[in-house]
Length: 487
Image 1 (cartoon, rainbow, N blue to C red):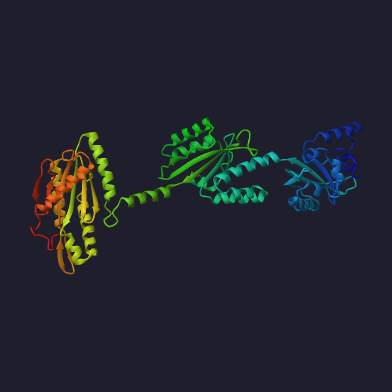
Image 2 (image 1 turned 90 degrees about the vertical axis):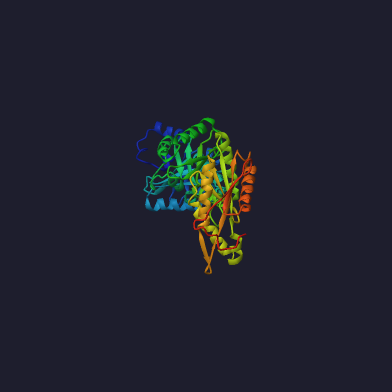
């Protein structure tokens, strides 16, 4: 029976009553099949197989029929046990079974097939197995190309390749892994429809948790993104420009969401599995960098803040001074600089310790900070030295500010171990461009004026003597001098 044609081995209702001419056509039909058709008996011995097997495997139909075990000849070793169990289950239950496995070719190659097993009976009522198989190698290559691209972008090439060589169960494990990645991943095919997206992609774009984007066109995704973005039209234009240029990899693009989040987007074309031909689509990667940007901004802020008083430090002072002067030059206005240090601070530090000195600095920074206005910036330059920058300054406003600063400092009284103590301020005033032509000379002019105030008796302000200097004694609110020793 092994060499007999199918019409003699497996009578069916469709063949009953066939004419001799019909029967003559059946070998022609069998020869023209592109897929594989085969019949096995209840012991899984091959009874008949279509000639198309030779085109896919290199084994002729006669080779297969002569083999002691056709399944062992044709099926990859790793899939053989599964194939036997599945066939036995179909024979036992009568339920059809479909699955994918690898065909072992004569030249040692492997080719993916989709197999359909069905139980049939011959004319005597004996159970037979009918196998129909189709070549799905090209589909498998497309699947692997997508997974390899995602793996490369995640810097886990070795791990992903391991999954690519596995069965459908292992592909599910890969999908689970991608869902744990905090990068949003979406693959758009050449028809501009979604073929895959992971959970992070859903979360970043605020889709419902159970949203299914598979098959959705990219235009629909862009429309849904517009209300979420500060510059949605710019993002749409960016996507259009990438599509026109057909660049393999796009430069990172920063998305600002209306809820304050910042997300970077980048993309790459996905080549076919053989590396040539037309790209099969484009993969996009989205990364939420909001927390990283905030942390960076906080670090930058800490770098320009004095840790004790939380005032801006000397580094920020020089940055702002340059900016103030550039703005003043452009607008033809003046910049005012007040520099002051504390009279009587060193005796407090020496007598009561650095903790007492720190308490004085913090308290005075808070007190003076309350009288500094919107167009003024307050800095601690180091030790007991401070500065105030004023934009759009005029002489009267600067002397008024100096009086307020001096009063705020002198009016603050401290007690350390039952002993009263206090400090005053010697303030130097300089203006750009009246007293200086650049930032360095403006600082020097204010510093000279500050020392002129000290030399004039302290607790006072002095204008820069470049070209005209002026000094004025500042009265204390209670007309009492500080109880600590002077510097």
